[in-house]
Length: 243
Image (cartoon, rainbow, N blue to C red; front, side):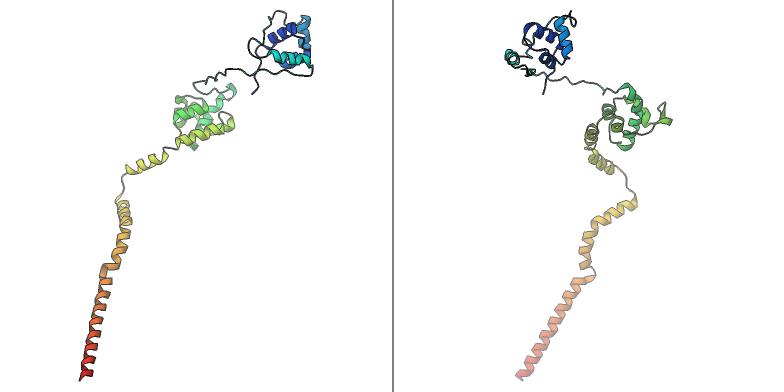
């Protein structure tokens, strides 16, 4: 990643005074116009600015300067810093441009209507608003409630689609557990309780249907009686043959 040069005019002053670089090379390195660098050399521009050595602040090396002095077409590059400082994350509500602050109630109304699972803290992060404003929009007590129109905060430029999807995903993690909790604490009517009881006993009823009314038992008894009569007939036939 390219690094930006610190104090470009002060650096240009030092390069003009201490190197044999061309105006074009200094202008390209300091992101200035060549005529501006020529004005620095003539004393017409940056006359009260003290030169800053880019070698001391680690943004340029002596080898890079010597290479550029030997080749007028070479363009110097800013050196990579040896130590990278992590950017400090800004805490607090999201900053909203002044031109879009009037659209925040419309975005809140859209979020409350389309994503009721979102918490107030999540809406505050997305839109950069306050809890009192969210409550007034939700309860329809906002001073401009009659003129509010639900509008997507992504379309309004108040947040990105990635941030919105992330907050919705976080809010929906506890949704199934909450639904089961609500169902368990709800009182059922007598008809619903009987319907659930019959549904649970349905497999046992099917199993009992095969045995009720003597279905299998009656057929087994009939089979037993038929076998006795057959054996009786066989015995009578055998005795007749012996005689």
